[in-house]
Amino acid sequence: MTETAHDMLSAFRARLRGLHDRVDAAFGAFELSQRNHYISFLHAHARVLHAVEAQLHGDDALPLWRPRTLELDADLAALGAYPRATQPVGMALDTHDMRLGAVYVLEGSRLGGRWLAQRLTPDLPKSYLGLAHPKGSWPAFLEAIERIMEQNPSVLHGMTKGATAVFEAFAAAARAESEILSTYAA
Image: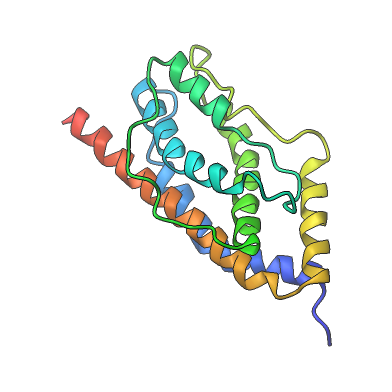
C-alpha cells in the first residue's frame, strides 16, 4: 500500500510533536502581560527569525510564506528595545527540503501567535503576533506541502531535519532569554 501525501504530512507532524511541545513549554515561561517578559519573548523570537528568514529568501520554489522580521523589529522598537547583538543561530538550512521544513515551522507559528496576541495588554504592540494567516492561506499552504510530498516523497527527511533545527533553535533562544530575564529579576 502506497503512503499518501496526507499520510506523509501527518507522519511529519507526529515526528515534530514532542519538539513542538518543548518549544511551547519554553515560551510558556514568559508572562506576556508583563512588559519585560514580552520584550524577552520577542528577543527570543528575533534570535531565530532573523537567521531563518535570511536563509529562506531567494528560494523561489518554497510555497508562499510571509516574512515577519519587520513586524517583530517594529514591536521591539515600539517597546524601546532592539534585537540583541547575538551570535548567529548555529543552523544551516542547506537544502530546499530543509528550508521547506523551516517554512512549515514559521508559518505554523502564526496560528499560535494569533492566540498569544490576545493575552497582551492593550498597551503592548502586537504587529508580530497579530500577523495571522489571511483567510484560507494555512489550508492552501498545507495543500502545497502535500503536493510537494506527492511529487517527491523523499523531501520528508530533509523537511524533518530543517523543522527540527528551527524548533531546537527556538527552544534554545527561549531558554537563553529566560536566563537573561531571571538575572534581571534576581
